[in-house]
Amino acid sequence: MEAFEIAILSVAAMLLFIYLGMHIAVTLALISFIGTWIIKGNITVATSLLWVSAHQTVNNFVFAVIPLFVLMGFLVSAAGMGRDAYDIGQNMLHRVRGGLGMATVVANAIFAAITGVSVASASVFSKIAVPEMIRHGYSGRFAVGTVAGSSVLGMLIPPSVLLIIYALIVEESVGDLFIAGIGPGILLTLVYCGLISGMAIFLPRMVYAEKLTGSPAQNDLAYGSDDTTQNDTSTLRKIVPIIFLVTLVMGGLYGGVFTPVEAGGAGAFLALIFALARRKLTLATLWEVLIDTSKVSATLLFLIVSASMYSRMIGMSGLPGEMAEIFNELGAGFYGMLALYVIVVIILGTIVDSVSIMLIMVPLFLGALKFYEIDLVWFGVVTVIATEIGLLTPPLGLCVYVVHSTLSRPDITLKEVFMGSAPFALAMLFALILIIIFPPISTYLVS
Amino acid sequence: MNILNKCNSALGALITSSNALASVWVFLMMLGVVADVLGRFLFNTPIVGTTEMITLSIVSVLYLQLAYTLRSGSMTRSDAAISRLIKRHPRTGYTLDLVFSFAGLMLMIAIMSMAWPKSIDAFENGFYVGVVDVFTFPDWPRLAIVFVGCGLTGLQFLFFIVRNLVSIFDPKVANS
Image 1 (spheres, chains in turn red, blue):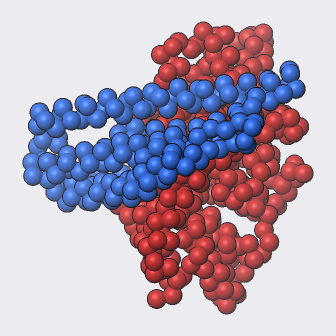
Image 2 (cartoon, rainbow over the protein chains, first blue to last red):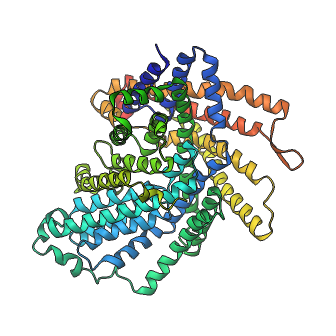
């Protein structure tokens, strides 16, 4: 058998075992081990690959960005800044039709600018935004759909752990990837707001609860001036810490004052100070934050370790070159290949989490696509959006599961959440196509 | 059953200590980075050895926390298919889960079998990280942590294997 055929079999076996429920990191490491052994006909190469990956892959200063940005994300949540972001969004938009829905989107965008962990957004906003929207006459399905849909902004708007991991595996600058996420993040926020506004005006039945359809437009206005609306000074007090954090982290990175690791450390430290100053952080919550941080970091780092074995196995098999050749013969060219990539990533996103998809698919396709001299930074943003679409799609969209399990309300079934997020998944696809056609949306700001 | 429970809680205690160590370590990492930045801005001198210590912390936190991620169910897997299988055909489902845990155990043993001689090697030959006369730190503790972390994770996989075995022969136990 040719080396690349062994690689194809390995990838197929991996996907099968992952689907059946084998731990993803274990699957990647073991099958890459066996694949390398067969390709090289020599177990020593495979064992040394395993050992080098296990102790050397993440033994590099730059990998410290992962725990630091994860820590910052959890501290920001513990400080109650998700609630702040929501209040700011609500104050801005509560007088507009569909305003609470848009407020949820904007709040997610604001929160995304200070946290890099999307699961944090999904669980924070399920608790805050869903009850609020239902209380104001929105349908449960629309409310949960909005929360699930907008939580993916967290992975697109910097800082983002997903962009960090992409940067680390393709050896691009973390700072560039962050900057490349800004334009698409704003675009997606606007697309979502347009979608909500359009639905509220033209399809009110999809937005508001049945019993209130008589005067759907009134719902936002009628409840607009209740207890949840704050005066300007309180909004200011909420927005200042957020501006501080964004300026420190993104400003520091963009201005070249900080390396990504330092930006993460400084951001986490400032978030810690805010949390302490607001007396939101007891010793017990700090302990919880630290356990969550090291747990999430260890999970991600171990995936990266095993994926590095996989990407080396793919590299030595010559599979990416074969793929490029096949595509050339078919005359599919660059866009054909990119379309296939996006479709595969979206499909995988329905059964696997976004980090794993990225780690499995990027080494496979990047080798083939690099013959077209693509912009790696732009490709990273395309990858992130494509994986995030899968997170909203049945059967296993991860964001949908988080929203569903955080809420655990008997009246909101998993199916409701999927139905509610479907329009948002389509809106993402629309934004993705725009970014593919007009790369400057993402690359313009990157110097 | 009693013995199994006792082993489980002993293992749990070990894993929790390792988890606590990793969690404190993450916090120290953050403080280290901040101290380094402050040192550079305020006193114009970075703190010697921070980079080396933070670098070796990454691998350490990863392996100290690995067993806990497995035990707490955070180690990434797609569990929809297998939980459906366990519900409908418990024996098949538990057998499959056993096979997967066994695969995990094998991987841990494979890494350990290399981590042990490499740690000894690094210890005996005095391998270090850093620059001589500026800052050096021995490399063996990091490699030893890889060994210990994979050991704990392997034990947790072993526990899953035993639990699945019990469930295969007596599905009621698993449900209780």
